[in-house]
Structures are given as structure tokens and as C-alpha cells.
Image 1 (cartoon, rainbow, N blue to C red):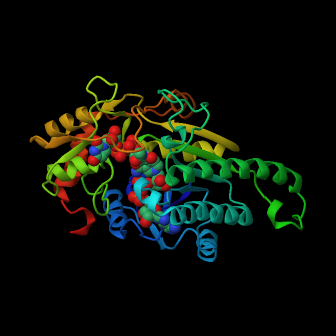
Image 2 (cartoon, rainbow, N blue to C red; image 1 turned 60 degrees about the vertical axis):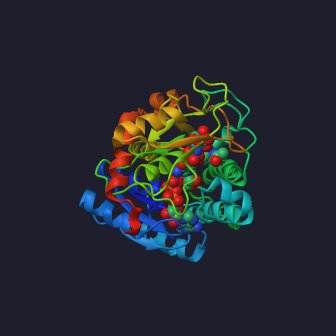
Image 3 (spheres, rainbow, N blue to C red; image 1 turned 90 degrees about the horizontal axis):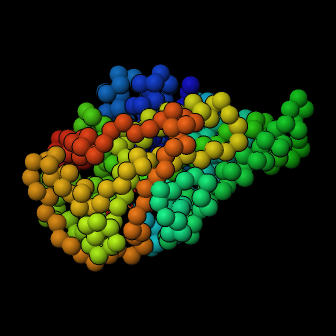
Length: 359
Ligand code: NAD
Ligand code: UD1
């Protein structure tokens, strides 16, 4: 299949590009590099030996997106492009809603006009909110999000599911007809939408050539630990050790980014065979605490990662992990890499690229 990745130069998109190419698909990328560098795609080309068509564009710029889609006419779009920093979203809600919602709406309008059918979306376990106890299953009701970033994921899921319903209604009505007078109902194809709820993506490609390269001070645990290990930061602050867990620190479902990437291959192939909306958790189902991650990383890098215990972080939930049975049953996907590979590969990337792509 021809697959276009919006935000494909970013952390998860670049790893997914490798998995897709290895599975025999053709990949093109649309990115505005607001949080990435074209260098990541050059390295993907080096790893895979394949050329990738690279389009610099804002995914909310309808004219540009239309001309790129007309050129590529992809069988599937995987929509990674978005702003993702939780704390920043609290300070810049307008920018977050504008960017994340607009990109999805623009893509939907273009898909409707061009009769494109298959769409895979990067959602997040954050949509479960704090209302349920893990393991989270897809049929649980979505919860109350604690920040604008989370709400953009929640809303984009809803928008996509609503568009899939309308497209199936109107595409069947207009099939064979010349098209309606009303552009808004003129769906040529019933959409196939796959919503992927990621748990905590971490690690890097085995080569160490690509990995996570956050701008500024990392918000997330694993890049922070890696930067302490490589000497860019003094120590990690563990956000609270008074939770009701065995060691008092929060537990999460950390998933190797290449396992996540392989989940996208399955999702794109599934989308091509179906219509309507389907939701999948992509996680391992196994939780690890913050201190377990610190110790595993220390073992992988061969020195103790310095840490101190600090206060809880506002908005954190104690526990989050997936029930990933549906992805196994329907997509035939499950994680293959464990915590040791996660830490090994994260360290391999960080130690080979202490300043990320910026070197
Ligand atoms: P990332 O920031 O590394 O990648 C996002 C990419 O999108 C970047 O290359 C950025 O330049 C691009 N982009 C942003 N806005 C754009 C726009 N308007 N037009 C074109 N390109 C644009 O982030 P990531 O970690 O690779 O995340 C990818 C997706 O997965 C995001 O939607 C994110 O919200 C979602 N997600 C990530 C995580 C995580 O922990 N990394 C967890 C759950 C969901
Ligand atoms: C965070 C976001 C979530 C988003 C996800 C993307 C919040 C509240 N949630 O999830 O919406 O989808 O990132 O991956 O920000 N920790 C420390 N010290 C640190 C950093 C983190 O102790 O310096 C702890 C946190 O308290 C948490 C765990 O490490 O218990 C994981 O944190 P993080 O990597 O930020 O992910 P989430 O909080 O799960």
C-alpha cells in the first residue's frame, strides 16, 4: 500500500516508517518540522535503503495538503502530526486546539473530496481519564481529561467516528450517482478509521540511529532518565513515592516504540479491509513503576541513574496499563520487546547521539 504519514519525521512516525517499509509498503511523509528534523527521515532512508518522498507542509493548510494528497493518492493516511506536551497545552490551549483539531478536520475534508478511505489516528490512553481502574479496555467509557492535550485527543476521536458514520450513510446513497449538490454530504467512500490508544511509547530503533529527541527539558520519564545517564542532567526527580503501589511510585505500561510501530502496520492493513471505526489499545499489559524503570535503565547503561524523591506531579494518575487482548485477537499484534530491550535501545540511541539530532 501507499501510506502517507503526517508528522512522519517525529518520534513515533519515523519508527513507524521503518516498520511499514520492512512490511513492503511505500511511505511518504508530510511534516512541518515544528517538533522534528528532516534528519530523522534521512536516517530512516539509511536504515531501510529506500527513498521516502518528503513534503514540508502544515497539515492544517488545506491547499498544500490537497496538492500533496493529489500527488500521492495514498491508500492510507496515518495521522501522527500534533502537539503533544501536556504541560505546554495547559499554557497554550488555543494553539493546541487549533493545531490538533484543524489538522484532523483538514485531512477529513481533503479525504472526502478525493474519495480517500483509510485513516489511522494516534490517540492516547489519556482518554480513559481517571474514572476507571486499569487494565483499561476499549469498551470503557472515555473519561474526563485533565488537560487540553488530552481533550484534543478525546475530541479528535469523536470527530473521526462521527465522520465515519456520515460517510457510510452518504457514500452508499451517492454510489453510482453523479455526486450531490452538497459538498458536506458528498462522501465518495465510507471511511475506515482506526483509533490507536497508545500507552507509554519509549525506547528506540535497534540501530541507535533514530530515537526520541525532545526539545528543551523532557517532560516524560524515559527521555529524562536517558539524559541523566548521558550527563546532560544532574538527576531525575521522582514525582511522589507515597502512592498506593508496592514501592510508592506510579505505574505505567511502557511500550517499545518498534512494537508500537508494528502495531501501525497491522492497523493500516486492517483499515484497508474494513469500514467504520475501530479502537485498539496498544500497550504491553504489564505495568512498571518509576523506580523499576530507573533500576532497569541503570542496569542497561552500567551506572546508577541519580534520582531524588520530589512531590507528586499535578494531574498524574497512580496507575495506567492496557488490556491489549483486542489488538491480539483482531490484529494479531502484541508486544515482543520487554523492559530490558527498551532500556538497552534507549541507551544505545542516547549514548550514540547525546544531543539528539542536533549534533
Ligand atoms: P513528535 O512531536 O515527535 O511528532 C509529531 C510530529 O508532527 C512532529 O514531527 C511535528 O513536527 C509534526 N507536526 C506537528 N504539528 C504539525 C502540523 N500542523 N503539520 C505538520 N506536521 C506537524 O511526537 P510523537 O511522540 O511522535 O507523537 C506522534 C503522535 O502520537 C502525536 O499525535 C502524539 O500526540 C501521539 N501520542 C504520543 C505519545 C507519546 O508518548 N509520544 C503518546 C500518545 C499519543
Ligand atoms: C504523560 C501525559 C499523558 C501523555 C503521555 C505521553 C501527564 C499527566 N500525562 O503520561 O497525557 O499521553 O505522557 O507519553 O503528563 N515521572 C517522574 N519524573 C519525571 C517524569 C515523569 O517521576 O521527571 C513519572 C510520572 O510521575 C509518571 C511516570 O514517570 O508516573 C511516567 O510519566 P510520563 O513519561 O510523563 O508519562 P505519563 O504521565 O504516563
